[in-house]
Length: 160
Image 1 (cartoon, rainbow, N blue to C red):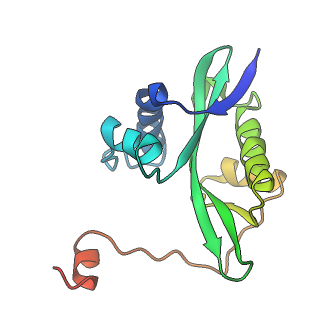
Image 2 (image 1 turned 180 degrees about the horizontal axis):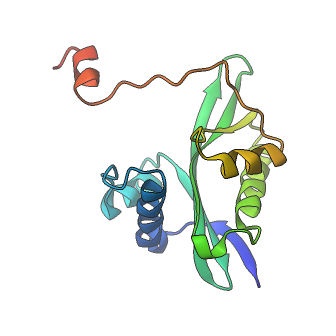
């Protein structure tokens, strides 16, 4: 078994979108994905990339990915790395792929001088939570995520 973590390329976009759809189904929201291949391509490889991605290849076959982007902390005065999605195909789980992706992301954060590496995990996803805790992650339970989207976003902007 040969595991390789590499930066995503434009040719990976269809595979990544498939992973996004698989992740949405796992997270019990299979109809929530609005992204298309052109949208994902533009977000990752367009003139102003919004995010970056890593691909996990097992014996030359893509079995997982991580999409991440930059954050900024006024408290540290430094950038941080936010992991948006991490997905490993079911047949590749338990083979060190997730650990390798987390290690690669942590390495990027360290190499670039970022202060933090953060992400969300669904509170019902106990296996993932246990995995992250084993890797040294600490829950930020005192924080509550807030979101404004759709009609509420338009209304808040005074445009709806």
